[in-house]
Amino acid sequence: MKLGAYYTGNETCEFTVWAPLLKEVALKIITPEERLIPMKKEDEIEGFWKATVQGIKPGTQYYYQLEANKNLPDPASYYQPEGVHGPSQIIDPNSYEWKEQNWAGVPIQEMIIYELHIGTFTKEGTFEAAIPHLKNLKELGINAIEIMPVAQFPGNRNWGYDGVFPYAVQNTYGGPDGLKKFVDACHQHGISVILDVVYNHLGPEGNYLPEYGPYFTNKYRPIWGEALNFDDHYSDGVREYFLENALYWLRDFHIDGLRLDAIQAIFEVGARPFLQELSDHVAILGEELGRKLYLIAESDLNDVKILRPKELGGFGLDAQWCDDFHHALHALLTGENDRYYQDYGKCEHLEKSFRESFVFTGQYAPHRHRKHGNASKDQPAQQFVVFAQTHDQIGNRINGDRLSTTINFEALKLAAGAVFISPFLPFIFMGEEYGEPAPFYYFISHSDAQLIEMVRQDKKEEFKHFEGRGEYQDPQGEETFNKCKLNWQLKQQGKHKTLWEWHQKLIEMRRTIPAIKKLDKNSLDVWSLEEEKIIFLRRWADNNQIFAIMNFNQNESHFTAQIPTGKWQKILDSSEEKWLGSGSRLPETIESGKQLTIKPQSFAVYQLS
Figure: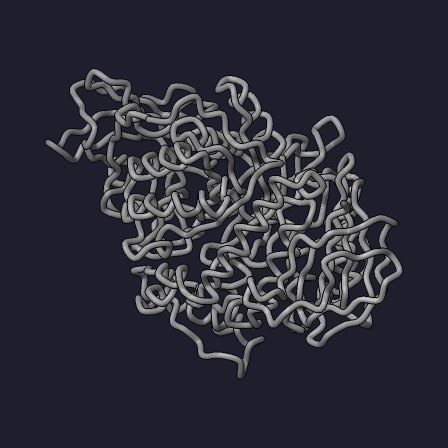
């Protein structure tokens, strides 16, 4: 089924809308000339209204008229050229001529993921303006881009999680053709595209779905408005709406994978979990297209059920973000112990994450005041995405401050080393690769004064944790948004240039050194010296072995090398002068049992000769 206005060619368009409880639905054409066309309810049980209209062209704007008195945009609109309150517009899904050739996608185990926000990635804030930067990302070693949500949201600036038209590409970014052109360009550079989608809530402004049917339920009490109706009366139509939405992005826009936002906020109780059904549908589409399509979850649950195959009672998703790795790394780098960071801060936490992925696997979590998580050690390493920074971890701070303005240059190199030496999927947030200093604040551009004030008060309440540590920025202010735009010229200057080259080297090692390239928790040994704040990591594949040393101490540390016998040759050292360090204290070769000294907050890798 294709929801919305599906243009079939020859000036013919099929309109389909789900409105199971309405008695009358009509199609109101706005341009080029007004006309009203009654729609037919094809099945009383399923609740889909349809109309096939001839003599109609792409670019035509329309509303649906409900009960003969309400003119509203299409809930499955493919384009909202005048924003969330304006008419919907017909597009031709086949008008774009794809230039990609025999694109098969990047296997997930090889992905180096780069998250970006279209509105702040460039000065112009459009898909088209982002394309020239793909060459630099490819040179860096990036082969997968994760785009923050682009579904139509109110106004022209937003993180994207306030979207209210899940099928419509944001008009201010360049609309559907802009996204297709960007994806096409990515594929021509050998870069897969992952799109962030939100199936746990919709924003309040411009959300007309309740006018059409029971898209929401009051069975649950989520933190972001009403819960979407995945298991209550008439939920079949809601599930169909979001299942088809996922397929729409993957099929019509050639997207390679979806990042599913905050799945812990998808509420349902039933024998057919929505995420499991989504996984099945995506797998079938992948077989039809002849390439693997991926689903990556953001989850706060530490529950491997979402990763396990359906045969074992799981949802069958391909991977998930691993917040525990971030929290453990961040706490060691910064010493912060407020909010959820109070649950971390020791080397043993990051050591466990290197070994298993989750840190909390059923034990008591002080911040949560309860036991949390289940064991992840048996799940393949390629199922976990790890990072030192994300839009959330930066933007949910009062200063919107990145690590580049929180820790020193040596610690930045250490942070990157920890991410890329891990056996998991590495992920960086735009600008991280060169130490971008610009903040990434939370920003909106709503038109509802009451809603704007409510958002302001919510953020002020949230930021009480940071009292005395920064100045509150108005989310509605355009200047707040403008401060977040990247300063690309820095990439060629001083320490920024060196940090970019450092990331490039780490990515190169990950692709060329078998022990690092192989994502396998079972070919890994990790241990630490808690008092000295040093973590050691050994990984191997066939006859290749590496030994990494991570010093989180702000002072020089002395230790005894506890590694297998043999001659170990240094291949990378962040404290060397070539990386703008103060000079290394580590020798070029080491052997087990030798006393060694390592510079503060440094990262080194040896390879067995």
